[in-house]
Length: 76
Length: 232
Image 1: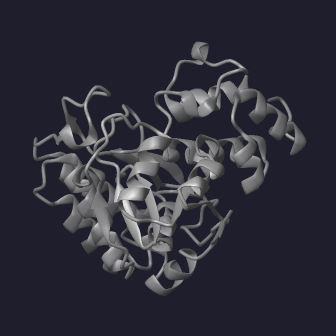
Image 2: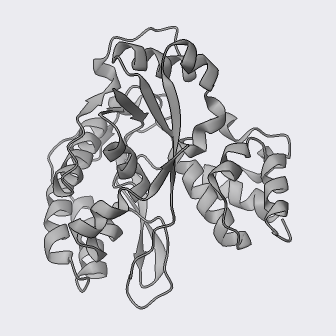
Image 3: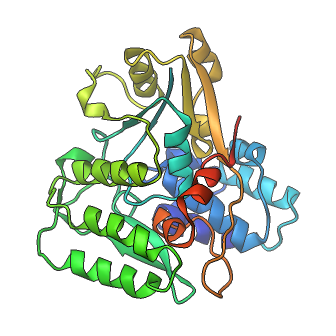
């Protein structure tokens, strides 16, 4: 799953630690810079432009999927 | 007084400096845990049109240590290697002659303590960009040992007498506007607008290290970039 791969790369976590219910900021490896990198990579990877409101709402992996779908992303 | 608090990072992206420039005081969280393979001691430049990670090597770094407990590796080689990579990559960029001496001065610093090295690097880039925001280490602020996360941030804001706190947008769900408001502090999040400039002939790679921004833009243009954000 592409989103899981991007999360794994951005926060340096194994893919098997990622699931839809994961709260992104709860990751031990989370910090603001890693989050910025994550946002950059999902924008590039899915060809979307996220707004500040989108980023604020992105608490969990499920939220990220939902916001990507709202922005027209495919093959999440 | 408007305050921001962030971990120190090596040559972070322009958004970090937007935040520094947007506030009256910037506190560097040097007494929090180091993150392995995070962004504290590494960042990206573009080499031949592709992302390239450069890393400041550390000595016995661990997520069980605080940032200010970590030393930079002193093998004498990494400085030359990083500077050579930057020089070869950017020597034909329009502002290399101005930016490279700043970067060289930072990299060749003899400072061995990681957090001091990083504070110095941010200070030097600030000076180059004429950003006057004072920097302070969180370890110099009396610490309530019971405070973590949002509570720690709030504690620092209160001790520094901030009435506004600005955080990066990525941390929005960690902080409660209501809790800050109860302590008479307005909470904002900074959202950088898309910034684009001419790199070499390749497709633009966004949000690289400030090194890339410095090499391709003069200070006046970068100062305009520093204002390209929204406060939410």
